[in-house]
Amino acid sequence: MILDIATLVLASAGVVFFIAGTLGLLRFPDVYARLHALTKADNLGLGLIALGLVLQAGNVWQALKIVLVWLLAIFAAATVSQLIARSALVQRSSSPAARDS
Image (cartoon, rainbow, N blue to C red; front, side, top):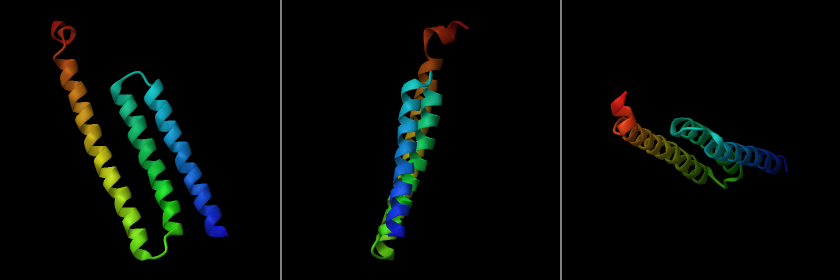
């Protein structure tokens, strides 16, 4: 019963962080602020959900698989956010307005 409640609390907190990241994506003014809000909030949200699921795992191997998925998602989000930020920087520096100043 206590593990079920802890899982529910952790998963609910994770969903709140996902919603916060989505609001940041929709409301922040530029690419860099959006990326920051989205990657930070989503990584924390996924971490909380993964922690809640680890509490429900039947054995150690299932728990390790959940942690591995979380770590892979963190590395993938970091890589993709770097690629998006670099692309935005290259596009900004090659725009006509950037060349005039």
